[in-house]
Image (cartoon, rainbow, N blue to C red; front, side):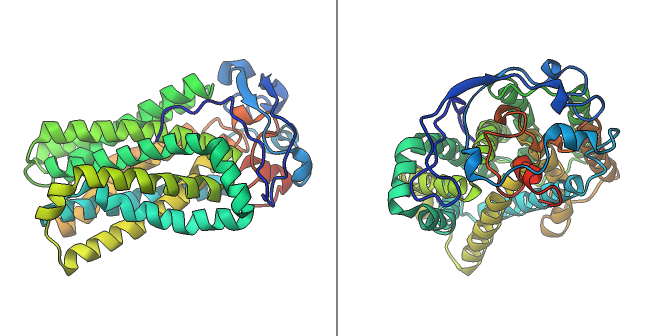
Length: 425
């Protein structure tokens, strides 16, 4: 959602934070993951650690003394579990797979509602997403103030607000251009462009987070994209793309730009939620997004707002869109923690299948025989992607240290699992 975040960040806890007490000045150091944490056959880094995770410039995270002690280490956990298909055998894989599909269906719902709004003459790309940011700020921002206190919250905003501003800015632009695309192109065309976000995520993760993907992960991405290719082929064969487009080229370019913004922001959010509490990240995203989106709506949606159709049906669409998007933003950080931005976007590829499934009833689309095959390929790509991953999968972030010393121990994190080996999420 944003320009890559500088990894050499200050990560001192804020005054009033119950979870993380203030720590000494931030110290910068370089971590080269050791082979002991990536035992042979146990993970994507099974052979040589440096083949899969480069040296990572990072800062100290939460004070280990302020978090529960580790009951185990990554090396011990890897040694005590079966090495072949280690992550695929664990319930965590099925949980994150189910969450990714729930998000794909949710995204299909928001895309469908965007199309319905455009069809009735109400296309306000910025205004449409404003209520989501307001709701996120009210729910998670208020909880952050409760946890940190007003002074602690202001301290956090002063020190790290610029990071969240960047995150919110590109997230807002991702929403804006994606919704704007539906004014000019079809629901299927806009969804098909979203695979570009995967390429953006992979490149940004390689360059800035020093993630090194295993060959099987690249293969999994290709298998999933092959499924997407079948969807495109099916649309070409059946000439079924959700109806005529007002300006397909213009709409597809907007969709491509929106997917690019999403790719950047996804990597930034994965980094931030791995180091800070989820309520802080989501609350700040909503807080800054509310202002950025509000200004953008006032500037760009003025004319379309006046000419738009306003009635009970439109209000219902907007309420549904807001609730679905708020749910999406609440669950996505868990997937970023348990998996990665890359896996998150692979999961969203099935949204094209779900979009057609919904479109059969809403837009009278027909499901071509290639669609189920494409769906199986995309889901199969998920299994290939994690075929060589170790016990913790991608929950173990290379920029947080060998035993996740620099990471938060909240819901879905590897650090939480090392503290409490029996937890599921």
